[in-house]
Each structure stands twice: as C-alpha cells, then as structure tokens.
Length: 492
Image 1: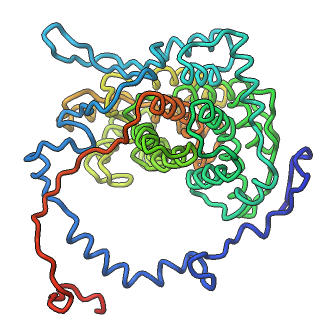
Image 2: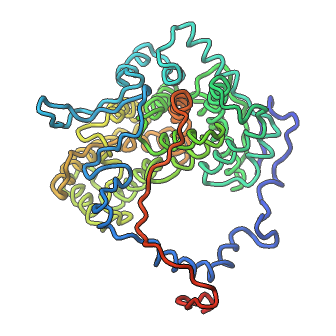
Image 3: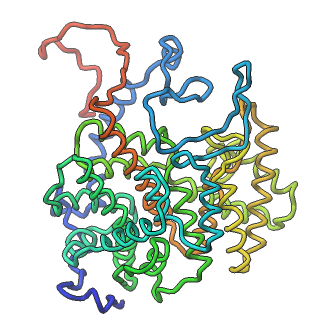
C-alpha cells in the first residue's frame, strides 16, 4: 500500500492509518458490525409492536381527503409556497381549462435551461459557476462580474490539513452522502458566525459550501479507498480551473482529463443544480430553514433527503439494471429480446423485482425531460470519444422501447419519458467515476439550488412550516401499571 500526498499539502498532515478503524462509541469492546447482532433479539420483538400498531387503513386517506406526499390523486402538488428560483412546465393549459401534456421545460430564474446550455456551450466555456450566480442572484452576470464571482468561489476552495485528518479520515465510509453530512455538520465548529442567519452571513456560508462540496466528496472517497488498502491521493484543488475540472483533477491519480470529459461533467452539474421548489431535498431546505436553524444543519438535512434512493440514487439503479440486461440479452440489436426483458421488469420477474424500469418516468414530465434532451447529445459525443457508441445505442434503443412497453403494459394517466438519470450513470461510468460518487455529484450540483431556496425562505417568511396531520385514534383512559394486561411478551 502506498501513501501519496500532493507535495503542496503535506504540512502538518500525518499518516491517517490510525484513523481508519474507529472505536465503537456505543460499546468500545465490540466491533461496530457486531453491535446489531447483540441487540437483535429485543429489537426484533419491539419491531413487531411497531408493525402491529403503526399501520393506518389506506381508505382513511381517501375519506379525509389527505394529500399523501403533498400530492393529489392526479399527482398535482399541493401549493405550499411561492418562488422566483425555478419552474417546471410539463403541460399546456387550453382555453377551457384542460391540461395537455407538452414537451417538458425547465426554467432557471425564468430562463429556459436549454437556452442557458446552448449559450455557454456555443461559447465553448464552462457553465456551472454562471448558473450558480444566476440561481443565487436572479440574473445572468456580466463578463466582469462572472470573473469576480468565480474568483471568489475559487478562493473559498480550502480545507485545512487538520480538518482532513480529524474529520474526513476519521471513520471513512462507502456511504459518501453520510460522509458529506458529517463534514458539513463539522464545519459548524469551524465557523465563528455559524448561527448567524443574516442574509450576508448565510450567503457567505452557502458560497463556501458550494466551493467545498467537491473537495469533501472527493476526499471522502479517497479516504474510503485508503480504508480498502488503495493508494491515498489527497491533491489540493486548483484555484484556476472550473468546478468540473477540479473534480476530475482531484479524483484521478494522474490529475488528467480531456476537454470533452470536463465539459460533460460541467453540463451534468448545470442540469442537476436546481429543479423546482417541490422536490424532496429543496423542500427539506425550506422546512428546516423555516425553524430558524443554521445553514450547516439545513444542508445536512438536505443531504439526508437526497441520499434516499427515491430521490438521488436512481442513476445507480439504471446502471445496475443495464448490467443485468446485458447478462440476459446478448444481441443488443434484437428489439424483441429487449422488449421481452423490459416486460419481465414490469411484471416484477427481473432485476430487483421492483416492477420498475429505472430511468423511465418522472413525477411531472410526461412527453420529455428537458434535462435528458440537453444531456443526451453530449453523452453521445463522449461515447464516440470512448469507443462506446454501441453501448450508447443500446441505451437509446431501450429508451425508445421502454416507452412503448410501459404504454402497452400499464394504464397510466400521462405519458412516460426518460429522465435525466437514464443517461447520467452511463456518462459517469464513461468518465471513470466510482458509483459511490454518483449521488454526491448530485449534491455537488444541487447545493446551488438549495442555497437559493434557503436565502429565499429566510428573505420572505418568518413562519415555521408545520403541515397538519389528522389524528384517527379515539381518546382513551390511562390504565395504572398494576392493572395492565400483558398482550406481548418481550421475554419470550
């Protein structure tokens, strides 16, 4: 095993070998993996009580007109707030008030995201920093302001050696979203104004986190790799290059990348930076911000939301699904065989038996996802550069066939299209990015939108968000301990 450090970053940095095997804080004499087994018998019994007492009759949700998931029966979201940050359009309104599905549109601060992408790609420049500026401040920057803002973000790309040693190298994990949460919460201790919720201070904190998130993610992965007896490479970020370039520079052993690779990753960051105020993690930012808590707690909560496979982990499942497909369909051009495989997925007889074709369908978009449209062309270009055109053609073929199969097999109230996750996992694999970083890359991008939502919430509302829940249990009398009948024996 080799221990490698960037020459500029060795001062006050020690070999972290002592940090990779954490003591179990709940039972120092026992390895962490054994603790669950020790508690299993009693926890299993208590879990039975939970499973018996918690279920609610599904018919009651209809009876009381409960909007489960804050969505009505047609999938339309409950209006919980107003925003200037972004908008999603999937339907056209007719003169008689009916909604007709249309090609999906995503707007950042009122500007079509596809126009934004065309703007910086035609100029052959990176776009993420410009999009961060737009989301935070509401307008596109002038060339001079963009340069000043980008320089400021670059200046904030700094982590002390002691933070890397004491926080990142301590208890490394393959769950890098948890690593990010741990790091973000720990940054609270390093900020003398951590609990100041004034707009200037929150903006400073948000800009700092936007700059630091790529470093935290890459260093967290390198620490996890070191735990697995791989080389440890801690490379200082380059203050002169873009966010996307820095991710590849810090992650790869040789620090090298092609322009197309960096531009594709930059595009992925742009397309994941924001997606309306109603997505789970952005709403989490709103809810937690409304309590008046600090920025670090808010972003840690958002990271916990994004970690969930229903929100941020879909592209990993797409990749795994295609790995399974390749085992069952050897001729990638055999459309009948591909259709048959897709039907097994829908019938819960293939892959993970979930009944899902991952990467297909979206809560709002029906005809097309504008992010997928913008991303697909650049993914194809990288596939050509990497000599993986056949694999890209397989993805495109499955996208087309899945739409047909889903329409024929299921009764759905709206159309089905590929979402951005359908191609992003394939793109990340072509970039040589490990799966452990797929969801953290989402976070690296989405913190731009989270920051905008936090600032907007603090600026416009002084009320705490507290939705109503209706109790369906009837009042009952207290029973003294001596008179209680034991209905469940924990000792058995």
